[in-house]
Every structure is written in structure tokens, then in C-alpha cells.
Amino acid sequence: MRTAEITRNTNETRIRVAINLDGTGRQSLNTGVPFLDHMLDQIARHGLIDLDVHAEGDTHIDAHHTVEDVGITIGMAIAKAVGDKTGIRRYGHAYVPLDEALSRVVVDFSGRPGLQFHVPFTRARVGDFDVDLTIEFFQGLVNHALLTMHIDNLRGVNAHHQCETIFKATGRALRMALERDPRIEGVVPSTKGVL
Image: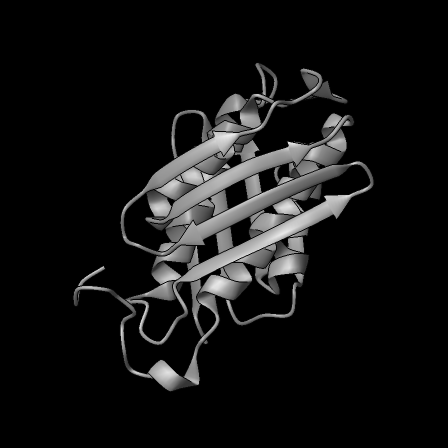
């Protein structure tokens, strides 16, 4: 089983993440940011990743530190759980619609962090959630999971739907990239012998 548990404490946040990359989508989420919990649920369900995330942060100020640090800690957990990447497909992609919204996410477990984020949100907030924090989450995730990720919202009018399609597509793309390919068992997928 590819599992990991990470605890990360800073002056602003205290976060514990447990992850099972070979799970069924089970989750226990309590970040103190309800919309973030809803989005993490999408990654777990659509990625078939068991995900436990518990965070305490300075949400009395705003959600920025909590959202960013949850992304960082999940990224650290993914990196630890995937290990040397032996036998994984490495690349994954997904298109996910939700009513009028459509998003595409493409990932590469390259060992090199990189994020391209092209999401023209149609409004600044979904309930109490500042949509600008979405990129902060993904930047933390990418930097610490050591993966390349391209996120494109291709269309959408409802900012909730735009955001939800991004997180669902992330789960689906991660699921594809992390899947073990029996034809390359024992091999680290690469074009030049190194990632």
C-alpha cells in the first residue's frame, strides 16, 4: 500500500494529513474551511484516494494560510506515498464537466514542480471562500508533490462549478498518473533514464 502520514506545524497552522493512494475515496476532512473540505472530497472521491485532513489555522484572520498549508501538506504526503514512482504511468489527464463548466487537468509526476493555472473565475467568492486561494492550494500541492500540473477552465459561468470541475479533474488525473502499469513493473517511467 502506498500510504503516508504527514504532520506540519507552523506559526499559523497545525495540519495532519494521512493518505492512501490505493484507496477507495474514503475521506475525513476538517480544515476549518468548509468549501475547501468540499473540494478535497472531490479529489478523494474521483481519485480513489483515501484522504484524512485535519487542520487548525488562523481562519479568524482569513483562510489563506490554512488553504495554502493544506496544499503543501497534501503535496508532501503524496510525494512520500508515491516514493520512487516505480511502475506508475506518470502522466494523467482528465476533462470534467459540471453543467455549463468544463475543466481540464493534466499532470506529470516528473519530479519537477511546475504549475500552469488558467482559470478565469467569474466572481471573487464562492460563499465565504476567496477563489484566489485556489491557485495558492495548487501551488503548494505542486511544489511539494514535485509534479507538473496544467489546469485550464475551458468554460463556465458559475464560479462554484468552475472550481469543482478543477478539483474533480485533479482527482481523475492523479488517479490515472498514479495507477500502476503491470507492463512496466519495477521500472521508473522516464524518457532518459531519470525523471
